[in-house]
Length: 432
Ligand code: PMP
Image (cartoon, rainbow, N blue to C red):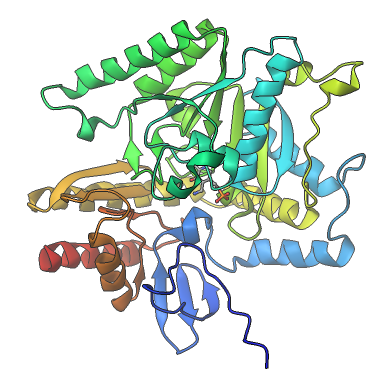
């Protein structure tokens, strides 16, 4: 008899973690488990869900498209769902962003942006401009290139040999500033360090990649818009392309459609994924300016961008994305976002009184509590305890080490979100 083929779950160590929970159906913010239980999805299933699980409008759009045309090759072909998505996104993007390239997920959207930036210079014969600047505490995905630009972490540690070198600059993570520095002083220090790096290596740097305003997987670090504005200016000054990784921050998460809108900057390249399909199907897109694409418009075949995944421009993912954009147009999505942001602010304020709490952070629908820990970081011993505590009370939260955060689907009701915060407060009171 062959042994059974067991599913190997992400971020799960079969020697340490409990077996996976079978989910039978999901509706709105609720996961319904096979044993008849209910779990509130307070992290939007790894940050992808916007308008609720099994949203009927998105589900209907996918079903209808599936009967007509599921997927066709996208090299040399196009289709209405993709064209419609480009037209739909057009309305939300700065006019300078003019070309959209499809891929499969957040990591591939990042890989595409990095490769476009490097080839942009090589197509112009400026082959020395190939290095990448990235922030400490940044996270951009799990594929080798995305892992290289991500900061060192337990996720990347075994793969040191596979990661290429990047110019790492300090993150304006003001809470963890060096002793003796004021927040303003540290922000200025980070900007100066960026300026020095760009100036010193202007001839060899192709691009800088950032998660705009919110470094998510690195610990839900919210940083001032001033840093992003200065980064934009410095990139322009030193002819460095700015890549905004809006894989998480896109589609309303920070209060505006895109985090770059909050800082009033326009990047040269934008990476989108996660919420783009409302959380139904995987899709990545990388959007760039005309200036970037122009470097690929050439009589020379070697200037072509030879990058294309099998499922590029998948029609089912496109109709899901179109249905999600339609929801943005027709339903009060930004009112829902504002209501979540208000509750986040109110509830986080109350956490200041607990000695275990180091800092609270909030931007739009994201609310985070950084707990004081000797072993701060993803592998903090607090993490498994907190995770189980929440789950035992029917709440799905996946703390990033000692940082507990809430990032719910936009359809969460005030009572439901307040309940999530009640459970977090109970954990802070009883566990520490
Ligand atoms: N960029 C950012 C900012 C992310 O948060 C993530 C995923 N957490 C990624 C890229 C990678 O996306 P994916 O997991 O879809 O490959």
